[in-house]
Length: 343
Picture 1 (tube, helix red, strand yellow):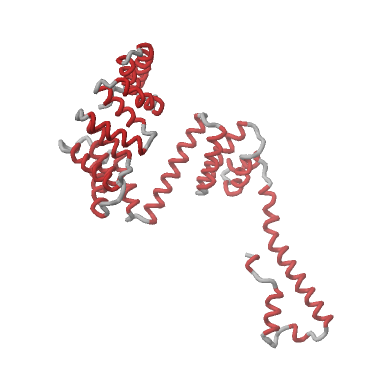
Picture 2 (cartoon, rainbow, N blue to C red):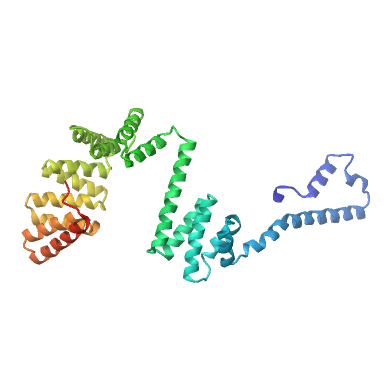
């Protein structure tokens, strides 16, 4: 606040120029008196600066807190006093165990203060220093969950009737298995703004996931995906699912066309490479199936069906030894995850 207040000389000079009869300068006729007053004004201005700096000086001991002292204060619940020192302590030379404690306590304190930027700083610090520590991962999971919840609350509080709020609510309902209200939300959004990208895709996905969607659910979902790519031709997810629906109907060529289009849009969509290779194996084009299946293996190595399809393509194209390795990986993954071939 002190920086926003003009110096005392500003008021004196302005009053003098405006001819204010109470201006002290009008009573000073000699050069010496004016000089003395100027010195007095300068002294008062300097004093005001010094006084304005006093709170900073008083807070200096807090800013000089050691990492250990900051941790002690934080553990006592005095987060506001210790948070700055905890942030500085991330760059200090302290034992690994202390660094871990700094990060964990820092996450807790920053969340308590609702200082979300600081929370992310502490989370990044923990990720970098202890990327595979189970205790750290536990803290990070809860931190992200807490930040997500708070942000959702912000959206609901500030714009409860917005399109974004309805979309978030629909996705939450879908995750909870509340299919009917979730579908109602998606259909309401489509009715309001039918050309909004992404909504037809979400409704189509729900119709395929909903266990009680009815016998025409697949066809209804397909129509939603087709509408989606009319609105957004670059939606690789919608195109991929259309390929999956064609594959289920054994429309191999149509499915391959969808899969290849999807991977052109998203080269990291491993499931589309798998579907592409699966169709080629079904058409007995085993050599042609190897490149997309090898790409799928690189992108989604934990999917058992990748190794089964690749093993089949290798075996039928004469690569017996490689095929046996792939089948062995498939069996290991399938028995461990209980995963069968995609439907």
